[in-house]
Length: 284
Image 1: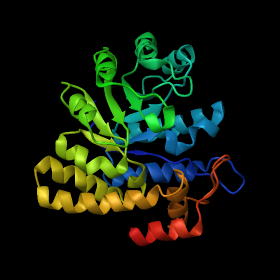
Image 2 (image 1 turned 30 degrees about the horizontal axis):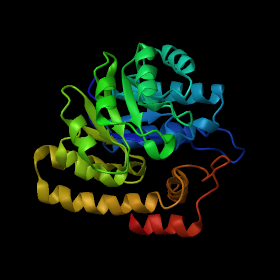
Image 3 (image 1 turned 30 degrees about the vertical axis):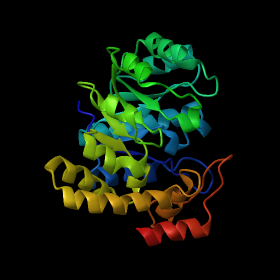
């Protein structure tokens, strides 16, 4: 399994009655793979996983696993919380069809660096683990030393880096052998690829998957001028996608394009404004 290229963290489309629109999810998964996604992520932040019940989460994972098996691409599944024992149990239940688990740094509790390192050490995961480092959401900053301590655990294979900045920490992580650094901030994708990142988990790639896949290919081939130009264009698109809480604008655009049946999100999220959706479509 190679964790490289563009991974699309799928939204969870809802029908008019609020249930999961499973056919739309199936079509969306196949479409992004058709358009060049290297794999998909189920139950990420973009999937509104926190508002799905256990049966719905299983429904999403089963569908995505089936698609990824058919298409022979990796499936990454979001798993974990600020409860170490519950995270360990969730990882044990993922099963053999999951290529890797996306495990967030514990949020809200703010256990400190030693606590975070102990959390990941205690997981003893049967599936490969991607660290999900997103301090704007977890309120838990980490030093490079702490992340490098986690990176050497035998089941840790990489990181979704979503710190919102490009700094020394990114450089430190990019230097770790056999460790996949995946951009988690869409607007920084091109810059991280230029520095040698293996890929990205990019929500805005729902909308123009071919262009995001083309950006990854351009950097791999060393086509610097094309990559720079395309990277700037996609950074502007990412800005439009996140002008309101994720995934509201992306869902609004997907609905406007006829790719999902509604733009519904679950509370506490509210649907994107019409202005934000129109701005997104214009940017596309």
